[in-house]
Structure formats: C-alpha cells, structure tokens
Length: 96
Image (cartoon, rainbow, N blue to C red; front, side):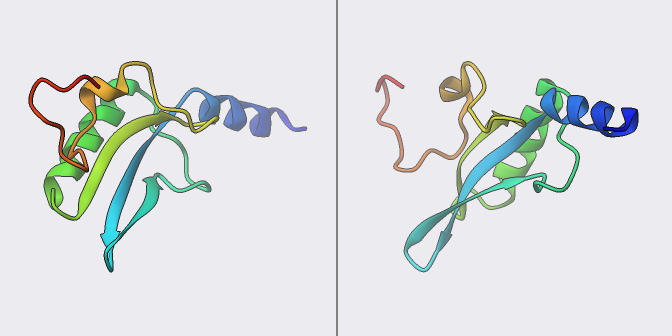
C-alpha cells in the first residue's frame, strides 16, 4: 500500500458522516452524506453543524438526522440527545 493511500484511509477513519431518513411515498428511506467515495467530515463539531443546517432545509421531509462515525457507521456518543427532526415525534418528557 502506498503511503498516500494509508493516510487517506486514516483520515476517513477519523471522520464523520450525517445520517438521515427521507420520506418517499409513505416510507422512510435511510441515507447519509458525504457519500462512501467522498472524504468524511473531519470534526464532530462541523458534522453537527452540517446536520443542523441540513435538518432545517425541510424538517417534514428529512427526519431522524444525526451524526455517525465515518468508518464503522455507528452513531456518535450522545447522538440521541442531539438527534434532529425525530420521527415519530417524541413526547415531551419521554426518555431517549
């Protein structure tokens, strides 16, 4: 493996993606950005900022928006308390 390829893989492993669901014909379809062939978002703060901006585009269409770890696709720690546009909507006082 070339050094440049190893560095690219390490950068991706350290980054984040934004996960979300979109409404399509009565169903929720899972998606994320950036795409698999694009570099991940380098910092957690930047990922949450992008998630927040994206969630505001159309809150009724894009739901369950949160940040995931770029290399293993798992939600970041504490994501439930920051998840945007919950679907189904959470009742006030409900535990997440």
